[in-house]
Length: 295
Image (cartoon, rainbow, N blue to C red; front, side):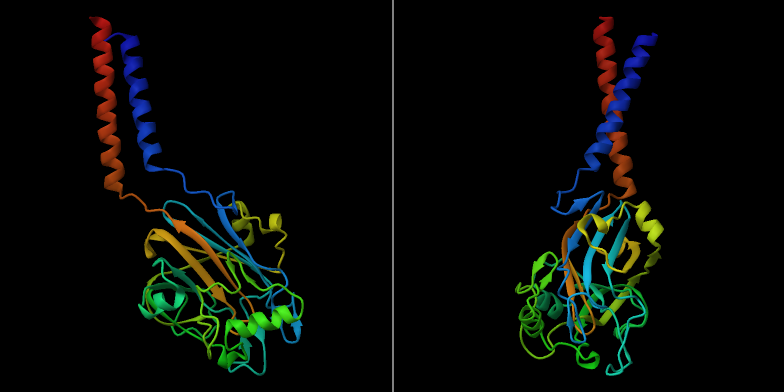
């Protein structure tokens, strides 16, 4: 085989490999708040309730962002509430913290998914009132309200009414404040804590420097809370597909939701089989091309 034939074979083989990789890495649908690989949901900057103050204060949540690689999901929260929580002598533990983070892939509203036990949850605040023992990722989750023991709002309508009465703008990030995805009325209906679940994974906390290196930038949305909390987990702990994720403070003094999706991760055998198959197709095409040239 002459050098030209060898070069043709090598070029066709390389193209086949590239096409295989491209086919397996189709781009994700672009969200309106997608930036540098992070999907952001930005909340109202003046709907946190801290004591008699509405807007600003320790319970102001500014945004949440989620990024994924082939095997890892990264979560970042921008807020004024630290992981140590907010000291309050009226709370049962003397402290009010973040509730748990919920993921809903079911396409149902939150209460229906909760009744079916189809929620996923992440306990990321070790000092909160979660019904599960340790931080981590949980499946088969049911949710509960811990607002009664944290001097909190009984329902979202009560919270929205107070915020609006002060000339502020209540919101839930990617969802409107009154979105029917959440139950708006009733007694103790803000479901903000894991009640039960099965642990399926750990979380790893990330430093601000690591988050910045990953391209996180809340400041581009003027979301400049005093706290940026980040952690990651293995995507195998959750399914692929569209989700709504959300969390509230344990007192329901603010909350935020984000809509997004996780892509499926091809099994190694799928990658290998596809690459090998397309490679042989490329080699075959190159050989036919060489034979035509010789003829």
